[in-house]
Amino acid sequence: MKKTLLTLSMLGAIAVSGSAMAQFADAPVNQGAGAGTKLTISGMLTNTNPNWMWQIPEDTANRATSIQLKTIEGVVNGTNTEWILPAMADQSLLQGYMKTPSATSGAGLTPIITVGSTSILTSTPQNYMLTTDIMKADTTSVAGTLEISLTSSLVAAACYHSTGLCYTTDGSTAIAALNLLKRNQLDYFVTYEGIRIGREHDLNNLELLSQTTSDRFAASGAVDINLRSVKLIVPTASIPNKWTASLPITISMK
Image 1 (cartoon, rainbow, N blue to C red):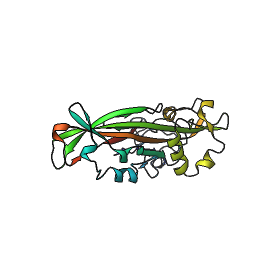
Image 2: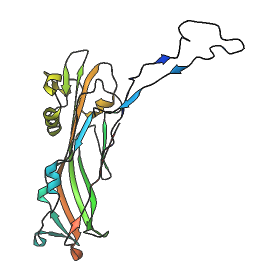
Image 3: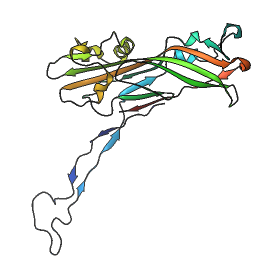
Image 4: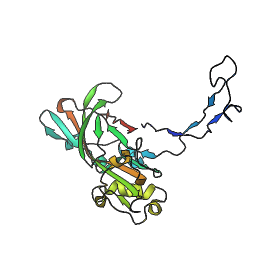
């Protein structure tokens, strides 16, 4: 799921009707000053070039279906039995990048991401732990939970008029997102020729995209949220033969 930002473009001309504003003139008798003058304003809303592109990788989606587990391999923990889902370990859950750089940073560029009910911070890479219910197949009965461990990789890039130099977040803390941006953004290495790591210019997270400054231009960002591990937990007394779960992801722009 995603919420796409509409970009407002003033494409229509601002004009006045007739020749009423061509020169100053007296108003007609018994009418107020400027009677008969009107201003016509027109324009368009466009969204032909989205700033951010998003995907749940196809390989991750494929691995999430028809997961095969053996009952005997479950680990009893109290009244529950637990299984690690090896097929879902170290897989990208969500990838996003800016298709083209924004001319400037400012409002409407920073993603607000929620996985389940957990908000993913864009200020620094973080680890997250969340749970979601699993349901017995073809029913509405809760059969247990999935315990999901996530980690975020977040990168920002921008250039500065004052120095003529470009900077990016330190790739050692955001390597997955940085590689995503390099691979997918058109002309990345042309836009950011000779780019330097962010600690030289206080550029360390995606929040820079929401900060308006006349000095910054060519602002970009990327996100890679990784599934570190997924654990299935069900009551030992009622282990289901088949189960299903969903993990909603919502995205809006700050």
